[in-house]
Length: 98
Image (cartoon, helix red, strand yellow):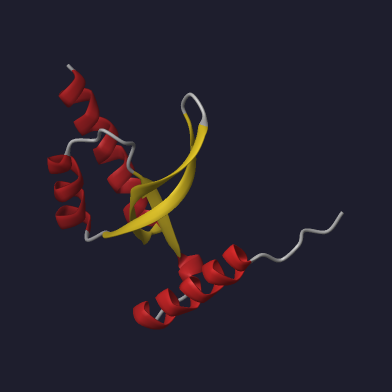
């Protein structure tokens, strides 16, 4: 059965076009790192500054007890930069937990 077009689909499409115009590049060339709720803010700030990532808010379904739609912070950038930032994130989180 084909998917029905909804208002949310149109809003997401419009938002994507606006972001593309604002950035001057295609959104497909950018990747997101989702920051888990509870991530220390200093780690996010360090990643933004060191890797020149753009903080963006996205709505995602989060399955904890019930499936809720939440606003989460993602850090957006080019693939190579995002991969480096991801390794940095894992290293910093290990140090934070230890």
